Image (cartoon, rainbow, N blue to C red; front, side):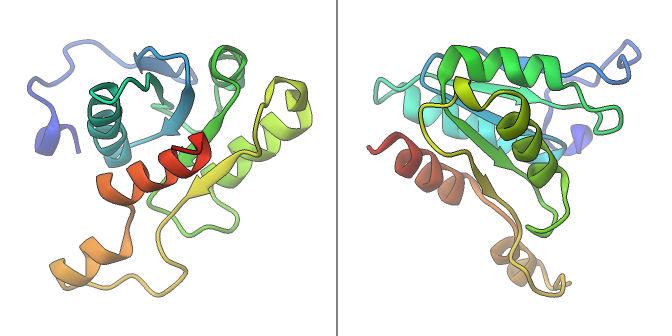
Length: 149
């Protein structure tokens, strides 16, 4: 996905098990990985123009999962939205929310939310695939709902 969306390719090896904060914010944490990071950054940019500061955490690896970075971000924002291209059950977003709920429940000002692909077989036609997965528009709607905007 980097070659599809990033301006430049990484030149250094990615540290395994270490998430990266790609945008700092104070109102909401969006945790994402792979292509959804780019969508989350677009949403953060859009909502920043409206006065909302979203922190975007790029997991970069899911095993091991960098719970410390996620918890530190949620401690700053009090709100969590996990975004992924996988189905809603048994995926990375579900695991991130489970860990935050069990290890950092007191950090939350609102129930954590997740936004995943639709719980259907993955379509192969590009138009159907685009409708199947989260988009910047659906992420923005979920963020606004979580922030009650």
